[in-house]
Length: 460
Ligand code: PXG
Image (tube, rainbow, N blue to C red; front, side, top):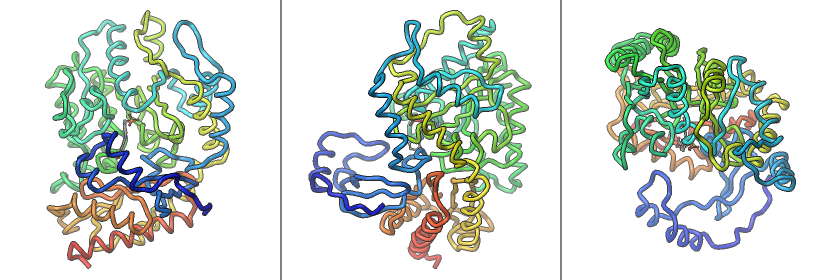
């Protein structure tokens, strides 16, 4: 666990070369070049080490994806064995291979019975790109080609490629390089910030009814699908009120609009259920998957289809004009297979649901329910958000909440814990294999970071 590690080069060398060649994600590159990125060199279990030898407890599973933690030898062995046997072949021109077949068998044994088919991709963004074309194709096949419009949500996140970012509702992303036609948005169900005087349930219903209003405004005969994350991830780890999903599902069914769940973060055990829609109790027509499918060890994503959709596309659809060089890549498939087997056979998802998830949330309530900086604690399983509030009773947020949360994240790094900030929320999503002792450490170090933040906010 604490093996010494010698990086090959000095941190500054790495940073200078990095600055010379890379445009990083979601950052002002000039500012980052001046500061120099942290260079991560090793991972084991929940821990990461940087090039200075500093150790961090990774409270974010990388980017919400390393369900099994770092350094799993069974996953590296699966990759090596598959590379030796068949490093690459594709699913074009009437071919397939055992790795992808076995992966799909296992995937559908874990999914509810009304899903039957999957289109593999290399990422969550691609899954959502494929989603748009597949949903439109479905309606074409059913003789309703005018059903084309996708409805998403403001502050939703569905990826960084053109159509995925258009489906998402991050306006600063829309401003960088365009939108696509036939996409509309409704408000997000973020009660703490936008609920006003409504109870959470009233607000959840109100947000869901916006979908109905939007469908009626656009004409149900023109609307293909509604896409949403079961809970918002990148937008702040926001759980919707309980009333939200039942109303959304009812409205989608009433107007014959496909319900598309983006399970890229919520899938593969994050909430303690295999999929987040099961946690919230609704039945989507499609599921976008990625991240935890391979525990992040190799890039792989996919679009899961209900039997009803797959049947129409297969039986009546003719040529499905889509395919990626790496769809169903054998090495990614072999790693995904080993990953899903471990999650299932080691009882990891069950452990999150029955033991470590409740433990984490009890700890968070004990630590933060009466904390002067924290107005709300949300989450389930290995997933949590702390909402900063200037006044809890009125749910008044700090004008500089983004800066405060970023500062808290920086304090976290100093204390040796990685947590993520979005607007005024601190997010935790540790690996599903986290032990109680590791969760103690996560919450303890987070508390120190939050206390330090409370001091600069004048709350402690
Ligand atoms: N859908 C959802 C719900 C996501 O969270 C994607 C699609 C896109 O997946 P790819 O594999 O194309 O990145 C995501 C990705 C963050 C953060 O800071 C979140 C994501 C990616 C990077 C950072 O919360 N989610």
